[in-house]
Image (cartoon, rainbow, N blue to C red):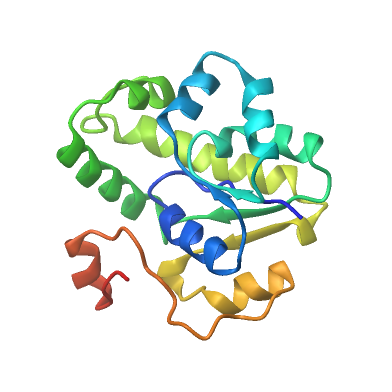
Length: 188
């Protein structure tokens, strides 16, 4: 069984990756080289890379959910999301404040920084989520939509994957100190 995390970046993809590894999946996460392959249209090479792993998440994999579905029948898809688009956008802005302008951000959004481009960034984020939901509308058993901020965790993942929930605490990985203060939880 293959698992594809197809939530947009800054939606808890790092947490999802930790969870999938805890379940024992050989996992591939964000790799700049993979995003460059996507930008160059080298989908075949990306599908070859995906074949080497049980699971994947973060860019470029959300762009490729249709191709993954076609190439690997029976794949289970997980759409991670934030509680609302504004929360997601604030996270993108905080990330951009730390990283500065990025060429890869321009590839995805048409702008190397989110500041001053809220509408465009949110349209792309929401458009992706809507496209995923529409694609799987008649196949609800193949898609799990989760939001860690709303309390989703081990139980939802375990049920979806047909596995036992781990005994360890649920990892909330890669959270900023501000996000930790807002929810009262720390990263693990």
